[in-house]
Length: 407
Image (cartoon, rainbow, N blue to C red; front, side, top):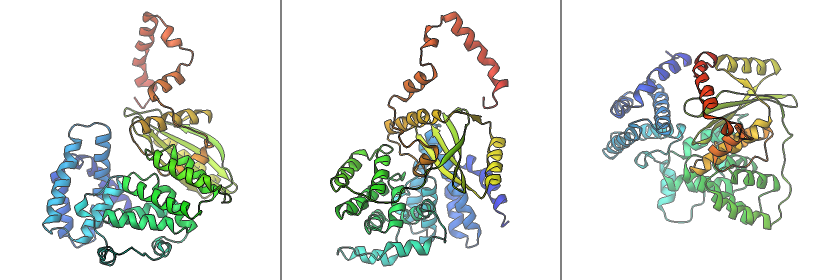
């Protein structure tokens, strides 16, 4: 229809039922391979949403969720080995996996021939200034996070060796813009990208090109990722050189904090209404039981009125409740600890929203369940109740269905 809203409605209609049917998704891939019209682009949008739903099915322990991915990966590998998928289709499918926070199957990943010729030579790889490449890919005015999002989809669709070499080289060249982008790769959901980013910052550290501001970011990230030991080693190397300098942004002012109630999967949305000088924005974070800081991003606002309208739209879409800013340190601390205990990586966008919420000193809390219960009932009043009194309170929960929409 060439109508973006219609396309999204179509995508949302079919993403859920197809996320349980690997054979149907493989039929969709076959149709994409045969169709040379513009519909293939829309099908990739659908495929990305299907994979996103399938990933959430695994996270929520839905029956058959793992079987879906096994069947899909086997079918894609079979088609790739048989030469039934051209390079463009493989690249598009790989991007769909990456947008869903997943690692693409190895058989689908490919790099431009020019890159492969360089790597096949077996000589030390000398790549051009990656900054020039990124400048050509990124629209004017793109933020480092926006560039990171687009760059990871391109790099992650290439073979592992190519991906890691380019990414390490990109950061190691020391271009300030590339270093800013590289910070997000330290929190990428794909492990090979995190490892490559650390290698890039190690190159910078060896040449004393990490300033105090970047070191501060490294120390923050160290508490948010399973790659803690490697980052510890990197941070010690940087500290020995006593770095100085770098630009620390002007602090944000937090005007209001609103949250949803945790839903049936343990997910909770937290929003902050923020300003910095004349700049207005809404900071958004989703925390989820078993997954830590699941998502984090900034919604820029053109004006105070634009910001007010954005918040009203959010409150209209879901029930939100005002909370004290002091709630944030506890909530984020529990979420970070919960995620780390399960080897989860904090959403890369948390690098941007954490300063907006004013919680730069937040640290992971171990024992998320006990920490949460302690915060709810710090004086142990519930534990001291008689069984009869506690049963009466539980009985009142039958009214929650009429009092709280989320139930």
